[in-house]
Image (cartoon, rainbow over all chains, first blue to last red; front, top):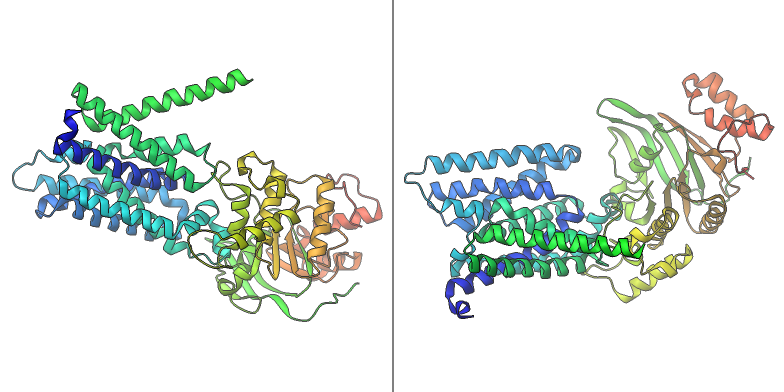
Length: 270
Length: 273
């Protein structure tokens, strides 16, 4: 338990818990809206923000936040009229965002090794200032989701019916995209943008079948995510493995054990 | 021909409305007025534009041409005063939501804002569930329901806001014949307080509660009677509008069954009276 006194471990634990909460909440919304591909699109396009931060020597996290929000807005605007073509538009933004990031990093004088940390996460290198920034993001996400809970639930369950009821579906669509972008940016720090999807999907998918409400799904997904992150962090430290990948594999292992356990129980019941 | 005893206030007014998906026309030059207190069946062949017509009236689709009024205002202003039960559950089956919470969503935009629903709102939702006989299922998750139970839940959701006009798209789709009669009796009772408009492709479902019929197949005809007389059918099909043959194939079946000459109608399990 000595290691808990090390500041970088403390930062890692704080960052991990914060990302777990953000992904538990937004992952639930993404999963029930069947928008996992969209979250993936924002996550990868966010790499453009990394490139911009490098090239113009700007602070990384705020820059990625701004760029991800921009991507979310473009996605929202382009898909508003043509919901059926959403997946294609996401694919385009996904590729263009990443390409922009790579080119900008290419032409930035002096190669920076820190780049990999954005792709695969660097939870053990999270500075205290980033933890503060993440606290602010989690507070914003939790606050907005609570404020608009009924509306988000309504639009997620039945968009057309909500529209008849006079729910402002278009502003809510943008709000949803922006909240996803914020959660994605936070997760980039912890497990890297390549692996964002796991924290967004594994816990919500496990919980979806059992939760009585969307709110409960969010809470339980967050709790599971915290378990994944902390146990993954411990294992990665203990065996000197890459933290981001270890967290994901821990979650995947949990997923497999849980699902096969549930399958066995069903078989035994019959 | 029975006349509606209601007031002459129009609930729905469509003037020269045309709608097309991309370049395929769905509805052309639709003129339609439905008065308060009516009980309207919208019939027509599949793909004839019945659902499109309802969605235009509710403001979910914008016609390229023409004027739409619902309860005297543009639909985007007045749609929250209407109740709507969609064709099938548009919500995902696995969605983590209980029956009571689905019904509560019918109060969106009606009662107060705030992030969560209040006690009085829950009371209203329970009342609506009771009305459709689903109160004992209030705490069930929607994925545990049968098709008919889900349909009744969605009806409760449409009713919970005490709408002035109720739209139902294929309300009988997942319901057995006994349930259909019960549902029609409930709608007949509700019709004392609200205008009811329902879509069906099954003309066997024109119950005695129905007061008028709208035929939709690109164009729209309003019949202020639930009975389609031979004269009407002949006029529609033969003279004024030959292209209406397809649309009025369905009313024709009603006619055929009344005369007892049509036996191949697979929907003919229930007489209209």
